[in-house]
Figure 1 (cartoon, rainbow, N blue to C red):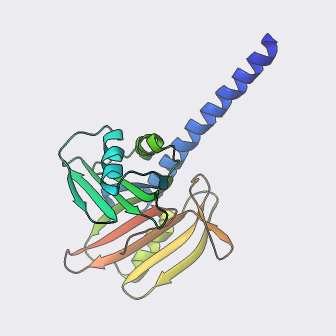
Figure 2: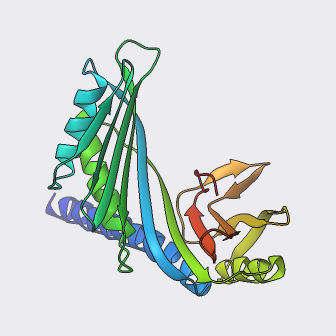
Length: 233
């Protein structure tokens, strides 16, 4: 009996180490991809989303999720009849919590975005914080991550393509799709070591990079996201 219990404990320890190391690997892999492009770091966003079964109103859900993040600071909240948006930016971290009532009477769609502006990126820890917030409603969120950077001055389309290729210059990587519209370059693909993924045209995609020159700012921006970039660039 003791031998069986010992074996079970050993297997549980292996599973725990695997889960921790996988989260760290995901985090370091995405940051490594960004670093290969040689851009100046601007900010990193991690978003967790999920559907919550609750009778709570949207404002209450947003506030409960924020409190569960255990962050301090005064927030602003905008409430509508079927949605709520909570925001806080204390200079070091930016948080946006969005909730929207679904057609079902007791179903709320929730999004929690945590952003940080320093280059010491730890996606794994941020994901844990977001997961802890959703856990108050017994929900396991889906995740997407995004790192934004910039190059001073204008990069040509060919230079943008070179930078995008560097993002994928890691072992066991593959291109899935590339777009070039004359002003912007966007490339999607798959890289071993990043767990978040989606299926696109029968292939797995877990990383997306985009570059665009801004005449207004006089610099070229780069976004590296996993599994895809969800904002307009």
